[in-house]
Amino acid sequence: MTSDTLGDEAVLAGLALNDPEATAAFIRRFQGKVFGVALSLLGAAADAEDVAQQAFERAWRHADMYDPRRGSVQAWLLTITRNLAIDQLRSTSRLGAGGWDLAGELESPALGPEDHVLAADAATRLRAAIAALPPEQGRALELAAFRGLSAPEIAEAEQVPLGTAKSRVRVAMIKLRAALGSQQVEP
Amino acid sequence: MRAMTCAELGDCSAELALGVLPGAERAGALLHLQTCLACRLEVQSLAGVSDALLELMPAADPPLGFESRVAARLTGARRRRRRRWMPAVAAAGAVAFAAGGWALGSATSSPGSRSHQVTAGVTSAELAAGSRTVGRVFLYSGSPGWVFMTVDSGRGSGTVTCFLTKRDGSSVRVGSFALAHGYGYWGAAVRVDPVQVTGARLVAGDGSVLASASIPGL
Image (cartoon, rainbow over all chains, first blue to last red; front, side):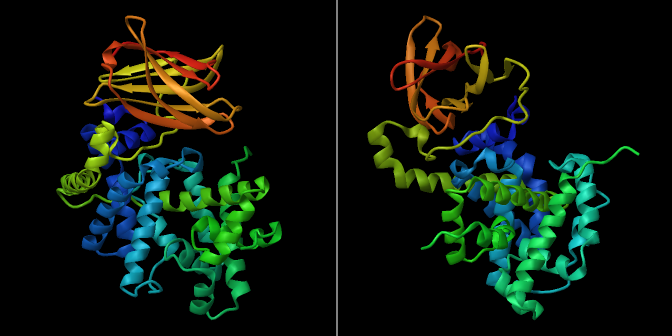
């Protein structure tokens, strides 16, 4: 079979029930994305593998927490991965480390549409919106979304008032939401 | 702890959606969201952006042997959990549920337009209330076999009970779960041979049948 042909939620359910076939299918289906996110955030393959393994174990332990109304299984699993990677960065005091380029990290010419739940045109719009963000908004978004920094931490890192840091994150997110929601208009 | 106002929530909705709102503020925000649908929808839509950002990140091939190492890690974790839970589980005679429950929504990859689907070892069928589709039920013939279902009927709250119908016409009660405003998802290991199952029924507390499914043979 078989489990490879099931929907993501069904495979997650099988994982939680310790079904070996569903477990294998779950790992195979998501390992590339999970490892990719961990590698992008951590940089080192050994660290990324450790976090990716933890992410799968956490998904198994907390499968009952997954709520399909809040997003896809992949998004849920990648959020787990991101949070674990951020914990790892915090534990090694690398949280605010610079040299990370948001637009560059999200721009991957090698990516095919099969790599995303996100529709190709939505991904294109999102990338364009990220590239169009003013640098200070892009940095604030990067620090929050991929470094897990709170607004007070961003304010400190960027040497700006708290209200400014909060506003930058909020405005950036609203711009990206508008880009995701916009439809291409026929000329 | 004071619930936030709509204006306060609006100022920090993006941080909440990104999961970076500090604890005290987060608690106030969550209190507000319990009673404000508009703000809940706002945060939900921003959470969609957060999800999209992660999904935009490139995939990468993990090191050789990654899949087997993860499988081994899960096997070890399951053994530890089983050892810890075994006394209670044995007493309850519910070994198949040692994982502690699970959740399921509508299977996005399942063919929603078809009334049923069979793959080797798995079968699924629409749950219908009259002529209206209100969910889907899946039956798996592994060891143990299990059933899971998602329901979204749009109305009604309370505990419902799942019965499976066997080929000989008898019914087996599998378990109960809660519906909130018509929504719920649930699963359980089944003690009956899944091959013998021909249907499923969801029964309300007053005995009325809320929905039923005709399950194709495995």
